[in-house]
Image: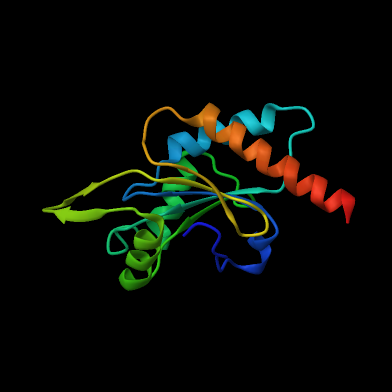
Amino acid sequence: MKNETLSVRPEVATKQRYAAAAKAPEAALCHEASQKLSAMPDAPTNWHFLSVTFDPEFDTPAVLKSYGERYHYAPAHWSFLTGPPDKIAELARQSDVKFEREGSLFNHNFRTLIISANGKLQTVFPIGGDLSDAILGEMLKAAAVTNLASFVE
């Protein structure tokens, strides 16, 4: 997936993106990073979290919206995505996310991607855990490059 352009809705396309894939999206991590960004003076505003489910049968748009509301998400900066299983599987494959259903649960690895505003993959975190500070740092780097490029042009 490195250096490939992603297709994203126009209103999100001009923003730096962070994407996480999980059955129950990793909302706590996004929430913590979002809170830290909001608390920073002069923080960039060109960011957007994308949490992608790989269980579209359970995680309907209504379920995902409810999930986001529990974390007080800001729709302008955070989207919970679902879609046809084949498209989710293709995105997972391109992102090196591996998942398989085991009864009512999923066995899966973790993947966190930082995608620049120009749609290029900047960083991949191949592990789960408390990465909010590392993710925030990478987002700030991407925003600085994006903002500099905008200023120079």
